Image 1 (cartoon, rainbow, N blue to C red):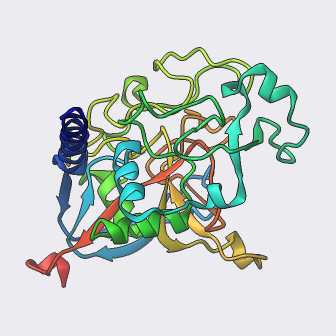
Image 2 (cartoon, one colour):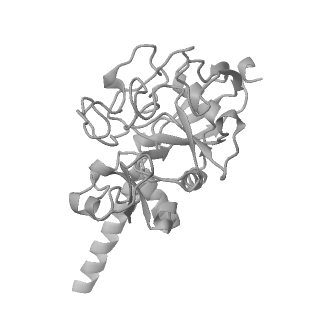
Length: 307
């Protein structure tokens, strides 16, 4: 009889966990973006990594995730597919130095040339963002970190979606506005996004409340489409291939990341200037604790702007 009771308890526990994982999440919401022609990029002299000059592009209507993919969503994907991320295959990933325990930091002898704040941490990946001893247990609504372009593509396929293109991403980020610096308009608003405040890389005043990545809904929507975290917090992979500025040859194929992260600045005095046109490129197997993504879906053309 006791054995039957134990089995029943196990069955009920599994049922509860499965039901919880299958429950629709607010983080699964998508937003429809009307097709349009718009001026993509910037003509500002501060433009970098191919951000300038601007160009006219046309985008068809589509839907895009309201939030970056969360750790909770990514966990469902991994549980369902037994997927191993690139960071897990490599056995390490990059973590911002100040997020590490002193003992771990002192044991690392290598860093990125020209960016010593990036340290390769053994067994750092989406489930333990700062390496052994860290956890996503209390961060299910944070972006899924250390996810590569390859990981993003596989997740989107599993979810019945696809990775958003760069032009779609920028059209969505602009929120229907023309020629504005930010998704909400022209004026910088510290309370709208997670970027660095203070002297980089040694001082972070955390005026926005966070020293690293923040929950995907930590701030109110950034534009009239109701989209969160398009600028700041974490870089987002898109499906477009990155071309080196001035057509310089690249040793490896790279893909575009958009939006900047918690390490970027208001004025571009260090790292990237966080705004709606911010971009960079990286190899498809790259990952760090400021990289994530969101997905999209195509829609059938229904209006003239889509033609």
